[in-house]
Image 1 (cartoon, rainbow, N blue to C red):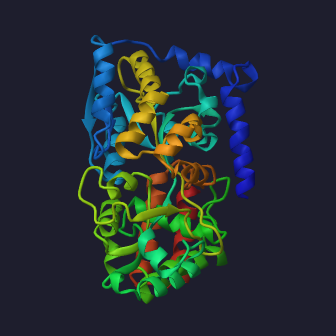
Image 2 (cartoon, rainbow, N blue to C red):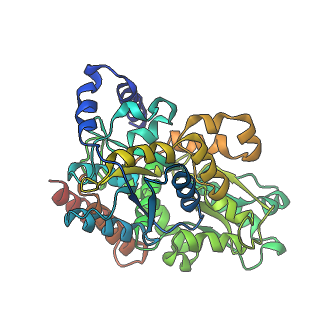
Length: 427
């Protein structure tokens, strides 16, 4: 199934980058007619913990004094960001021009006509990692440009694994065995085994999807139809439940979002952590004290039934339907997704690029040895459910999975209830 999706993505990319009428030339022309007006614009994005966006905006504003960009910083929570963007669209406000969308929102925003179609031939899409471009398409038309991507990696205490003579695990069973051996060391006293993101928010959907996908299951199929009440999905959810029950995952992790996971790893409280690439610079002590600086490594995610499968994270830049000065917005998006700006995002915040050249550059690989691993994670990643009403779907996932992790219902009941609710939501 994953191979068919990868082939579909490649086919979509070929069509995306072609300039012939058969592959959407007419839609490019229609998109261009809506992108008029030059002057000041705004850029709405989530809380910028890495401090990247001000640098990009400063460079743009210096070169375009008559078309300045003003940064609107939204909350750090993805759910709160989406809510504010939806409210802005529903009131047809022109307050937001360029939207920094979690890539899984693109389908929803495009289907509701809250964002405008973009001309494919303006953005060098053949130079982007194909899976990232796939997230920006709706009905084979372009509605965003990938600015950052995300593939999860397993962070581990390299020093402690080496001392115990243990290799990074490839499966959850191997990770449990590794923890048994490493946590017996005097240096590991008081540590827990593994942490991900299990608070009732978008990160829980991501972690659940990874467990299910790694066990051979899906939440929704290729056509967006729910198919989560399966033995494979149950195996994935059971792995998470058993992780909490056995103590492999510390009980406090039920409250963890990305920041809490990062701090637990940086403070030396967990041996392994599932995290995005932006944890790398923090753990290395680039901007705050880290007890694990120089002591950690990264590896592919372990899986429930074999090698792990990351959820495909990342952000697409899109233009609000109700914004003014859309021509300026197109130029700013092209500027903000150029190789130079993506290199800046990587250097300052360990934010994963979407351009293939940055992963394949020997100089960049020497500076960031994990880039080949990260590229494989992104190329093999599975998208979260690509459905029009994603907000309601992810809320349903969080509700039932969270209840199962807390022991309020069995895994079988949680998946049965989730399947029934998703069928209602997706029609």
